[in-house]
Image 1 (tube, rainbow, N blue to C red):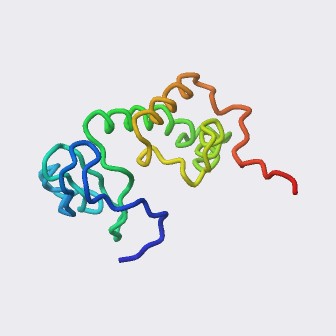
Image 2: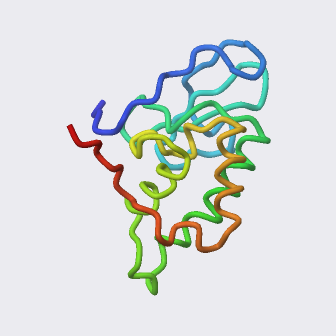
Length: 145
């Protein structure tokens, strides 16, 4: 399988209940296969995560119902900022870069799918200001030598 995405560690034990995690068809969750058709799924609770197309690389961390809800809330607030034909102000990379700078993390680590509950709540708090991204540098400042 092709590996052209930043890897997130493959889950083997569920963060929520401590049970084993299996690699399986996402039809076990949705009733039929969607997207890549595969996922990592806890054998005991409702936690799961999909994988990048044509890879074994998880899209992020295992998520239970609460975490999935928070990730959806984040995307619902974040995606319209860059994914809007009328918005020539900011693209996806710039939006994630600005959020990363506000969070104090590298842009390469800024993925809602990677975040835990506390980080997702921080994102929601930042994004409740509808213009949170204006005036924020999207590239990390490099310290002079």
